Image (cartoon, rainbow over all chains, first blue to last red; front, top):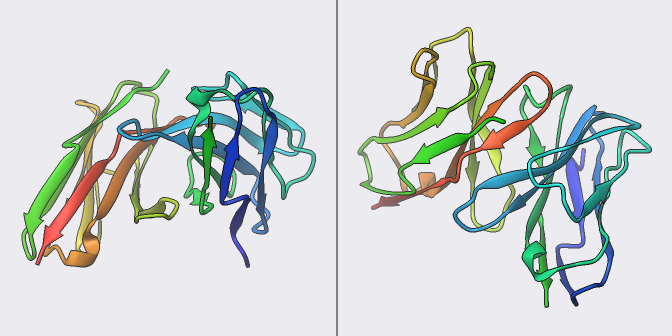
Length: 113
Length: 111
């Protein structure tokens, strides 16, 4: 099993550009989530999904969109990148809900100029 | 929503000493409390977790205690080793799927 994979590992964007961060898991997990990690602020939940076709907002959803068309994939879209979105983004998955061990991907380091 | 506070933000101990990290949470409905370890350049990895129906859980050198009345939980690492050096995060989760993390503790174990 590859576990949770994320692409790209690094990305530099200009303000106003859009892009999609990819996340995939091969563990047949129902629950998937996106976090951003900023210095001194821990991990903050952006969006999560409890199954294909179902998504919900987390703590900091503004400026981000998600969709869950398959169990395996959970892409995160930045519609119009802003410098405040410079961060490290982690995707995670777990068996059923957040109340179980979450497996994290290796992260995507995003810089918005 | 749930709010998790974690202390201290940095912790330095000598090899062989114990380390304790404390977290408090705000929502009494939270029922799952994991601890994650993050090494440099990697994603967080679960090291131990506890559910609200249990007061203490131990796994070799690592233990977690939960006080539901006071709404706080703690991570205890005994006989620390240099490879324990990392950033540790606590978290609290409600059943509906919204997990909140503490700000993290950078633990340094000096040989």
